[in-house]
Length: 182
Image 1 (cartoon, rainbow, N blue to C red):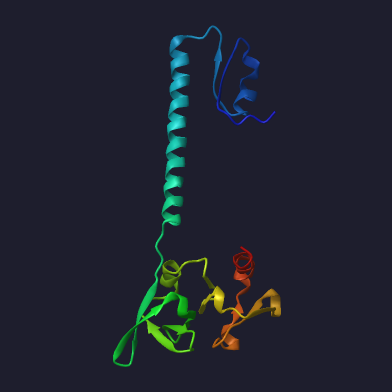
Image 2: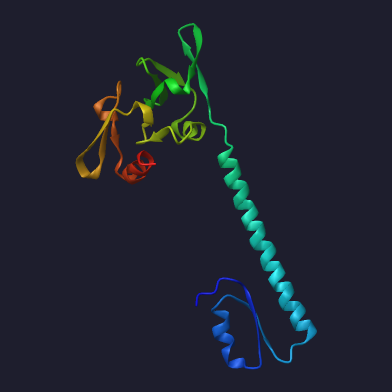
């Protein structure tokens, strides 16, 4: 039987002590059990429970912050002398070219952004955006077609995305497939 609950063994036989510690034991008390020994074993259990509950609470807080995370809804971009607000829904992809990150909208217009692709990856909802390579982050809704490509890679087809920019890097293919299949 696989035991997962913490156990304080109490017995008159000392020959099972080593086996006891292999099955999630807190302590191994030999009879007759003294008050001090029992109190120490219970204290040890309580300390372990507090640590375990603290770890659980910390994990729950992490999950809560991820669930309630607010992702960016729009970007302010320059277009000539104007400043425009581009809703995230209008983005087809983001591309890094010559040290500049460009936002490409549904009409194919390109706007320079001040952030790096690494920073943008944390600002955009990962349900809708995936970084297919070092240079390109694409919106799910902008993908028109996907085809196998050389060396176990994939080729993504999207309006305004050039052929040289549309290959999913080999390291990201598995994660990309999982993202598509959710």
